[in-house]
Structure formats: structure tokens, C-alpha cells
Amino acid sequence: MIPTRNQRTIADPAVVRGIGYWSGRDVRVEFRGAEVDCGIVFIRDDLEGCPRIAASVANRTETPLRTNLQSGGATVEMIEHVMAALAGLQIDNCQIRVNQPEMPGCDGSSMPFVEALLGAGIVEQDAPRTQRVIRRTIRLGNEESWIEARPCCSSKTILQYELDYGSGSPIGQQTLDIVLSPKSFCNSLAASRTFVLEHEAVAFQARGLGRRATCKDLLVFGAEGPIDNRLRFPDECVRHKLLDMVGDFALAGCDLIGRFLAYRSGHRLNAELVRAVMAEGKCCKGLKRCA
Ligand SMILES: [Zn+2]
View 1 (cartoon, protein in one colour):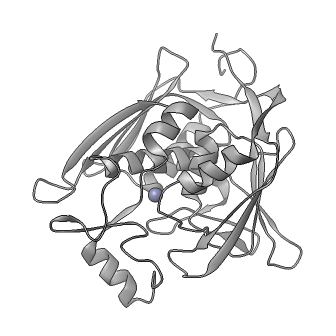
View 2 (cartoon, protein in one colour; view 1 turned 90 degrees about the horizontal axis):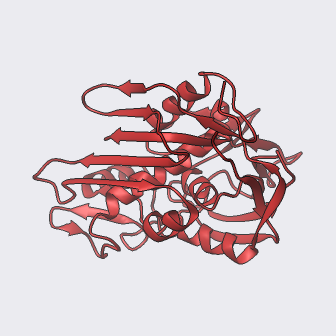
């Protein structure tokens, strides 16, 4: 028997403002509480009819280096750090009203969203959270990068990531594993920032992307380490890869119970694993194991 928890939402609205890294546009995001079983839903306030986009892997579109969703003609972009904040805090039902497609980059981490959501207050709801228990090992990818879901004898979500940029890189090799909970997410992952290599940042800006983002707004790695910035953790990069996993796994719409190991995986493989896990059978509520 694997115990589950109750669903949660926020008590009051919360607002985060910032700039979209890719678009350079100012954006306002407002989080509002939502009913039991509503899930996480984005609402494009700026479009006629305020279209709704459910945060589901079924709505994910393939875009390099970020997680975007589309439903009907409406999109929301770079949602992974917002989703990580919600999932990390175990907020299951939330409406997210936005006036631009792209979420604000803020400092490149989930912490600005976490602080806003904690300030709004988290309330437990009178219904169990659905969960999916991993019953057999699923492995996707190849030797260069892979991700795996394994059964776990406990009722926990355990994440492990191995980052490998090679010994000649300022990022190098980093490995971390974590038992996911609101406390471990806030203490170990939420503040870790997204990162790019200097030549990648130069290439983005040459294409007209990220013109308002500076080396102060995220980690840009040169040959000697972060340019014009300081690390918050010695292994901040691997922590951020785990943060991205939390955000991408949230598109399952239920808690994933098991052990998840990743080697150099990114958003695409993370999403493919969610699809594969969700294709395995039914989710369950209450105290029973998945059938
Ligand atoms: Zn990220």
C-alpha cells in the first residue's frame, strides 16, 4: 500500500513580472487558486476569448532548449521553471493567467515563483492526489544521453542526474540525487539557475534572441567559469538539470513514484519518459497501488 497525499492549491493570487529570455518581452504572470482536479492551466489573457492551455504532456510541442505548450492556436513558452516551482511545492491545482506567450526568465531559477507562491499561502484540498507508481524499468535514449524510470521500494520520488560536459569544460562532471519533497526542492534545487555556454549565448544573440538578457540574468559559462556572475552552489548546473526534470515531469499531471535516473538528458527525453510512463496503465487515487 502506498499512501498518497491530498491535492493542494494557493489561498490568494500571486503575481510575478519579468522579461522573457527568448522574446525580450515584458510579461506579467498571475497565479490563482483552482478547484480540485482542475490541474495546472495556463490562460492567455491577451488573446481573444482568453484560451486555456492545460499543462499536459499531450499539449507539449518540440522546441529546442525549453518546454512549450500549445492548445488550439494558443501557445505558452518556457514554462519549465514555473512548472517546477508548482510541482516542487506540491501545488496541483492552479490557474496561471499570462499576457504574453513566454514566461518571465527572472533570475533563471524557480525561486521568484516559489517565493510568490509561498507568499500566497498553500492550502490542502479535500481530495487525494493521483499518483503513478513505476512498476517496471523503462529506459529511453542512447549512449550519449538517456533517462530511466525504475521501481522503488519506498513511496518516494527519487531523482538522479549525471551531467557530463567533459573534463576540459568549466562545468565538467557533476552528479546529484535527491528525494523530492517541498523542503528538498526549496533548499536544494529552487535557486539553481539555467546556464549556457558563451558561444551558445553569442549564437542566440546573433539570431536576435535574448537581447535583453545579460550575464547577470542567468549563468553564461566562459572558459574560466561564469562570466560576470557567481555560482550559488558549486554544482549549480546539475541542480538546475534536476529542477528541469521536476518541471518536465509535472506535465504528467500526477505524482510519479519511483526512481528516475538521467544521464545528459534534456527536455525532450524528459517528456518522452513522461509519455512512456503514462502509456503504462492507469493512475490511481487513494491508497491502492496502480493496476
Ligand atoms: Zn531550466
